[in-house]
Length: 513
Image 1 (cartoon, helix red, strand yellow):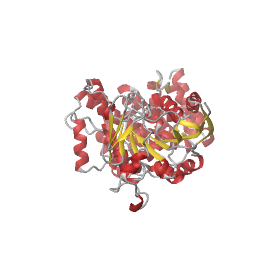
Image 2 (cartoon, helix red, strand yellow):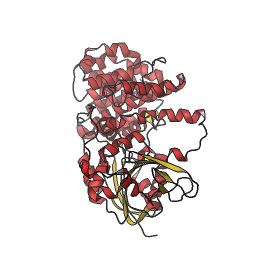
Image 3 (cartoon, helix red, strand yellow):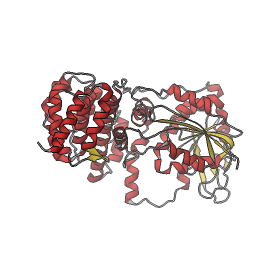
Image 4 (cartoon, one colour):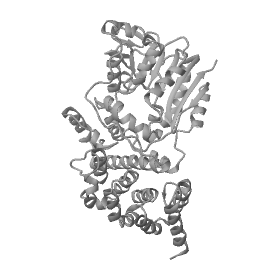
């Protein structure tokens, strides 16, 4: 045995036998030998057989996690070496031990060459549906003629589609070239594996089992309509509230209202209205056809426009995202905590209150109850989300527009809330924050919730490895310092910063000009 092998064998033995208080230190020492800067080291191949031997002696969760990491990231040679312990991994899965199962699922999901043996094992047959479906999809083979895209994360078991939703899928999947379909398939697979890995790493780091996952999608609309039917204002009243508050995205002039449209007196462009929503997108987009690259990029975001996505988002996808991005596997942060923060920190001065990137309106409801719905405006770039928001909050007018070029005059808003949204456009988050600073009146508050990178390098790796349809290049999050810098550049002073795990709650006040 070489000197390096002897050293690695000693590190494996140390990790196997480490008491609880030393496990992380021993794990970090071995991790440094086999994994650096997001990739396996040159010594990883020689270390794998030693780690497999260690698993045969004692099923250590951290060793299983490392084997899964190397199998999923190191190419066929390393994956084949990890596969040498498949009989042991399947025996362990059959034991159904709670502390081993999440790590084994991540490991086995990266051994596609052993697909048939894995799926035929008794341990897989006994898994809960959500875990079994996750593992089956992680191991599935790509079928170019029938690609099943966009429905893997956080488990295929949650995507129980009706015929209308299936037909909606086909409209964008059928337009993909085989190469584009393969890219989407691989991104789905990596994202699902990253979710499994993040869950396993959190468990091995904390020594706790994750809370049960919400994986049930109901057929209902999001929560009940706010207010009685008699109290619902007419569209005329709703749009009257916006007179003098909307500016033309083309030339910055304040829009006039002319019946069912908002018109620009300077450039004569018009923004239509319907169902309580003002559309500031379509009228202001040039009529030229997008080139092929632009069209392809647009296809990657089609999933977010599925008509029922609002319900999926609130009931299943958002809780799953909070686990990955916020480390919320044990529900350290609840929706009630988020509600309390908004109520405790939104302090508007004179002027309307904007819920920026409002989505389906879950937190718009909190804002409306706190300041009065007659003061609230909702803005989002997704029409399906705003349709759901309007059903929930018929007394709140909505604007279909961009957070990067807010359609409001300078110094016109009394407060802005942006909840769980900055990470949706991370490269441009600074632009969105500058726009908030421009539109806020002095003394008005800006409340936000987003996510910061995990301190643990593996947890951060699993965060980065999420390739959503809207973020095919991989997830990007923030540091607290980044957000503070953007706020300062927008002439906003931070008055509160808090949040557990990876959550970042902040409140800033717009300073005097």
